[in-house]
Length: 468
Image (cartoon, rainbow, N blue to C red; front, side):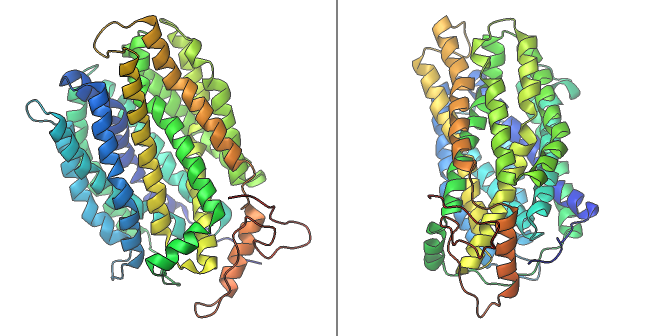
């Protein structure tokens, strides 16, 4: 069996996780504040904003796998991941500056161009960053700690972004808040990345990744990866819909736009505080089962949102608090599971290519966000919803259903895919044992855990049969 877990010390965990904070300070305004801001402040219709952001996100269908592939194959004295992050940071900062500090009256072309620049910079930074995390430890449970460190900082950064209107003294002036955040990001992103590059080692590559054509065949045979990716896309869309529509729901359905910051604070604070408890549960059960339970919990709570009406802010505050309990694990555990799936690919002869896998993972993340905007805004416009005017009861009901009803259905579908996921701690230990005893020149690929013979198993625990 595999040796004792390669423990990651606290200093490394903190230095690795820290860039998640400024990336989240950027992320929440980018996905939550920006669409409504451009639609309301510059007269760009909701459907047009949705279409522009969908096109920008579809650009990542090309860039994410490409950047992942290139970073896997990069050989330099600075490592495979660091050099790409250094190249992406300036691009990201330039793009977000123009998005958050628009000159004059920006139109559709302006929004598209600087969205493309921002998303490309984000890919160059975030994709190698997450792939690097998957490589810091080969242990099943240590990977949960690493992902939790990153996502804990992500939630903390999101808390700061949610509180930014109050902390910066801008109130409901979204434009002023975005302008101030753009300036702060020029400090936070470079500082955190420099600390990461200085304090966290990048593991040496043992197995070179295979050529793209051969690697693609191996990837398509990886049934657990395809299953996990689909579940992640469904759950990501379920999370992106309320993120995109949050301000509209609070302002138009509840009639309390001034409470948006407090409600977000409750939601994200619950996510930070509950994460250690979920990680303990994952040690007792498994990562995939714990993730499934968190999604079921979120569904049970969020199911009541469409029944709320104007003035029921405190009832919604309770829902934000309770549904927020599942946030941290919903962010941390899927990427930790993805790292285990990468090991299966390595055992099957794909080499060490976490970048490609997290490139496809990032593509699914951004596609989920694009689908949320591309689905929600056109449907709202068809329902007669107008973000700048009074709306009918029918239009508000459509807003509530898109905000909470559709996400519940999507999360239930994701749970069905993940509940009986084949790679648990025992199966992964056998995978690592196979990799640890193999050599680069001679190791036998093992079949995907979609069959009982997936990984060499003992008489007690066996990987169950699962369909792709």
